[in-house]
Length: 209
Image (tube, rainbow, N blue to C red):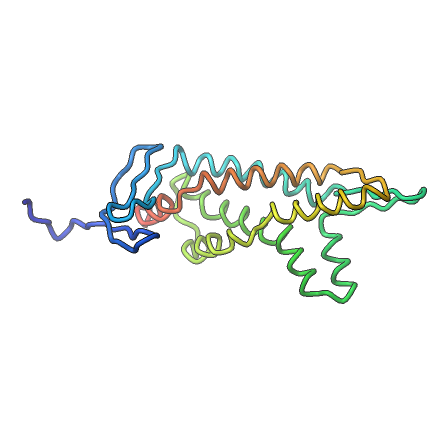
C-alpha cells in the first residue's frame, strides 16, 4: 500500500441518511454515487452545472423583472375594473392589520426569489469566468442554500389559482403579463435549482483560493 505524502489530502463526504464517512470520488457527468452502508444518494455529477444554472438564472431575472413591472391580474365586476400587481397582496394584508402575513407573502413572492437570483449570480459569475471569488462568498452561498426551501413560488401560485377559481364565479379575471411571467419564473428557478451542484461550487472556490 502506497504511503500518503504530506501534501496529499483525502476528501471525505458524509452520507445524509446514515452519517457514514465515505471517500469522495471524481464522478463522470451524469453519474451518481451511493452510500455503501445504506444505499442513500451521496453524490450526483450534473452536466455543465454552472453554465446551465447561469443560463436559467438570466432567464429567471428577465421574467422576475417582467413579473414586477406589468399587471398581474385584472378584476372586472359590474362595469368596474381593478388592476393588481405582484406586490398588491402584501400591501393589502399590511393595510388590513396583518403585517406578519403581508411580510410572509412579500418574501415568498418577491423577496426570496430576488435573493436567490441575485445571490447566485453574485456567486457563480466570477467562478464561470475564472475570476477571483466574490467577497463573502461563503456566507452568501450558505444563505442561498438556507433560504432555498423558503422560496415557495409553487405554493404562492397554488394559492393564486385557488383564488382565481373561487372568484371566477362572481367576476371576470384576466391574467396579465406578470402572471405568465411568474409562471415562467417558477419553471426557470426550479430548473436552476436542479442544475446547481453545491459540491462543485465549493470545490471551485477552494481551487480559486
